[in-house]
Amino acid sequence: MSEASGPPNVYKETPQKRAIKQLIGQKESQGNYNALVGPKKGKKAPKEAPITEMSLAEVLKYQDSMVGNGHLSTAVGKYQFVNTTLKEIIQRNPTDFPMDEPFNEARQELAANILLDRRKWEKFANGEISDKEMATNLSMEWASFPVPEDMKGKNRDVKAGESFYAGDGKNKSGVDPQTVLKTLNVIPGPSEATTLIDMPEAPLSSQQPVEGDPLAAVPQVPPEQQMPERAIQEPVGAPIMAPQPMDQQMLASLLQGKGMMNV
Image (cartoon, rainbow, N blue to C red; front, side, top):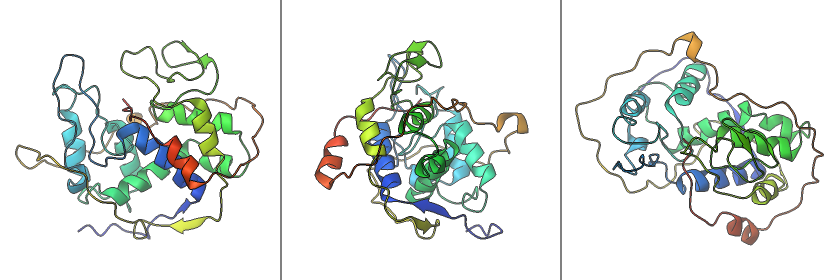
């Protein structure tokens, strides 16, 4: 077990954040911590691997061969972390993400918090940006999430409800904008300070063995590759919707449907 220096990082958890993470995880991987992104057209590739049992170094090494083995991209886990994003999370948060420690359920949840924070979650939670801007930011991080209004996407102009990455032949939205906005407007509730130690372990998904020799640790990412893959859009200036309560039955209904993979 690694003994990374420094105290564990502290993350804020609220009912609002948990609700949007639950929706993201459902649409990206159907909540499967061991999920792999789907195969290229005409190719066969495994749908999952024991990601939660692999060290972070092993996960990064495994991702290096995914595209060559028929996958659309390097996305893995409940929140479909691509290789470059995962490397950046590890390098910027070495205490919580030592290379020789497993990429288990708790670390995947914390990694999702980090991605939310880089997409201005705290500004949204504090009322500094609108729900539409937050929805736009989410669509730039997770390809299964739609843009809330017509705008310029990564590859072409996109309509409200389409993926920000539509037009690349790989990505499409798996949820409608209204569902995203309703989930964002779950009443926030009290904030809870959470660390890796506090994160609950989730049940493991069914797993397939990873064949081959033990995987070696990967080198650090060069500085020029450490920036986020996708830039955050400037504020769209939409008005902030007043938070509305959402009961469990309504939230459960929002989370139905097939998951879409982030590539």
